[in-house]
Length: 151
Image (cartoon, rainbow, N blue to C red; front, side, top):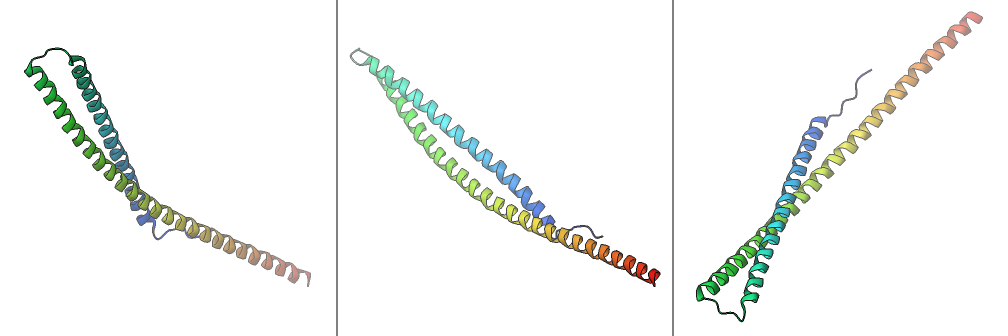
């Protein structure tokens, strides 16, 4: 009896490899989003610390250099925070695209796998039919031999 062969087996394997790559890209994109969130959180904490120091200094005499330093630091942190938020938006776009790509490829893999299962089922049914035909033929021959022996 012939072996089962799925004509799209190589394509299925390639798609499965692409699916694994897409999953790795999603994981990497998720990590970039997490890192961007962490960076934003650190910058927000640093900005809050500068604001708290400035609040404590209100009503006290400080040199112009101190005020200018804190003001400059808060401006730098604010710019860095805006850049980090832009980076987060870009990272989220990359993540969304990676998820979209993985979903598309996973659908293709699932479709090919379903097709393979259907082909396997047809192959199995055909093999069972052939086996049954062979058994029927064998049974008929034995019956005919028994009939000849009786006559």
